[in-house]
Length: 223
Image (cartoon, rainbow, N blue to C red; front, top):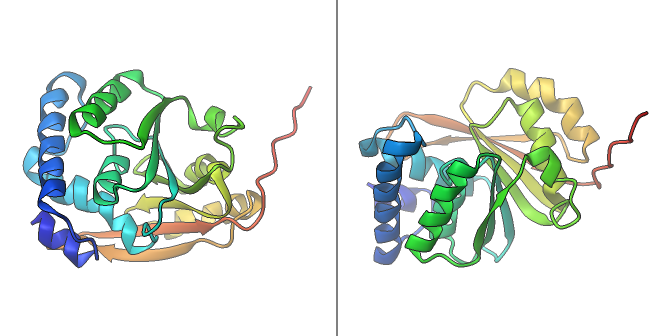
């Protein structure tokens, strides 16, 4: 199912990559008994976690060795699936909860992944740091917050010419409308919506892509 579904998304997977996905799923199931990392049952990981994460590639090119930050990664989604599928990516996995990152760090080591690391911080704080502000080609988040809030977290991480990507459900028209002013003020074009059907299902996703055209201005301090 994963092999065929990824191929439908234009992502060929090797046996080694399939084994990595299987091992990642086993780790997620094991740790989930202690940390409550996901409510998705193991039999649905392939569709609702792995293919759902890889669906980002239907709207954004991951063909080059680019810097990616996964904001609010939780159990490593979508960052770890993207890293497994595109091993040449340089990936940072950001989350504000240390317990989740303990799992993610363990998974990275167990899967033998390189060029990937975790960052324990809040998005709004990390994006102000010179090491992270406008340092990434792609910032991405999945099921983290409403788009007006999510855009404000994602866009400051992206360099001019890069993209901020929100993986959302299909009912996002009002969110997009509500976030238009924020997105443009932070330096991006009007967002583009890409509808993607998860392979082998009737589940649709909306991938919101925000292209960075201007620098994001720092907030002025008050008082």
